Length: 202
Image (cartoon, rainbow, N blue to C red; front, top):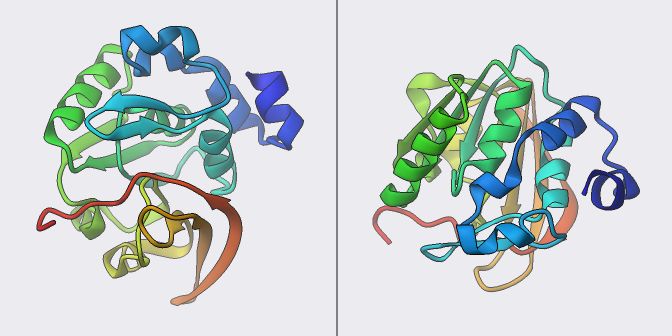
């Protein structure tokens, strides 16, 4: 996976590569899918959700330029795999999952694997986690139709956010948003497909 999927596609950040080596991806997929855990594609984890392919996880992690003292917000915990990758790199991770059963399972899995720096809650990720912000970085692992304003408000000065934005059931653009003195600079970095970011009132 490291050689053929990441290094071959310009994933070069040492911290990202180290995290991808350390985290046991097979622990984050259903038992019947474990034989495919390290394959170059996303996998279903049930309840209409997926675990992203390894390259996308690594790319979204690398582009945030994370430091070990950073506080990071993740929207869309899913199986907890992306949170575990982040947890290997940064001081603290706050991750939100709207599907309560997934949040419960991910929380237990991460605890069993020893990630005491990852905080999981079930809730509406569109609203972020304001009482734990502001955040040095925000990563959204579900596709939104627009950039949620609450997340922009929780992004620290100099902070970076990576989020897929575009129409549901279509191709989205992965956007890198940087907070420069309260002004947000947006750069399109890749066309992607993600499951929708859902709201509590949907």
